[in-house]
Image (cartoon, rainbow, N blue to C red):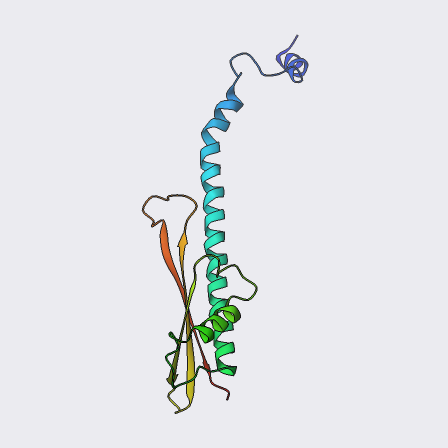
Length: 150
């Protein structure tokens, strides 16, 4: 029998002698790298999603504050009712309130002399995995401004 004929006969009968366990060794070498890539992609997706939520909350809060501006005679931070309404409007449709995000409202005059409201939203973010050379927690921050419409 020629070598080609023996190869054709052996093709469906499993690995050749000396090649047993080769696939297992290859998998053992590549699995940690693949797992690291998947965890990195998941962690990056989580931080990007949360950053979009923080940015949207700032825009929602600025839109609410432009229609319902804070009373200029009272300190916005001490007015608990207005602060609660602002947080409800900013966090509508997201889980930021449950995750400890904060909203700060500042009323100021813009360059054209009109009133402007600025809304800052901040949240502490923690990664899933302790990545080497990267912090495990960091601050996500977004600021939005809008002219007062009233």
